[in-house]
Image (tube, rainbow, N blue to C red; front, side, top):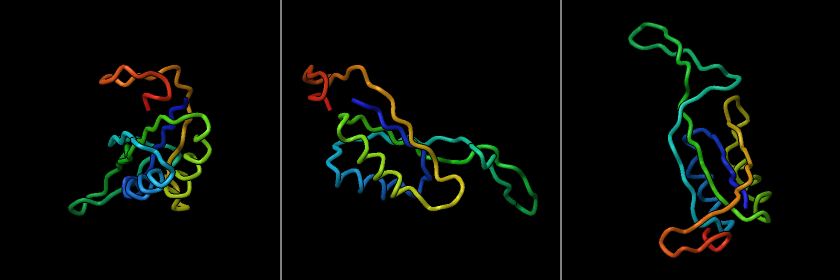
Length: 112
């Protein structure tokens, strides 16, 4: 099993979710986060005053999938989250040692 974690622009969340649903992904976790990468934030104007915003709003999407689904999931996220502009985000794939569904006690892939 793998944890696929993607940090994307907030307005791309629905498109990413729909693409993952089409692949058969049954669940995901989405969190509102703030951060910066190479773009180093941005400058905004509020009431005539210019100020720097160091941390930009993003959404972190986390999905645990079986090993065979990883490539398709990464491709779907990449395709749907891409705007071609700086700040589109990152995707990370991390090994998951175990999983358990609390309600039933199922473990491993059955817990997904």
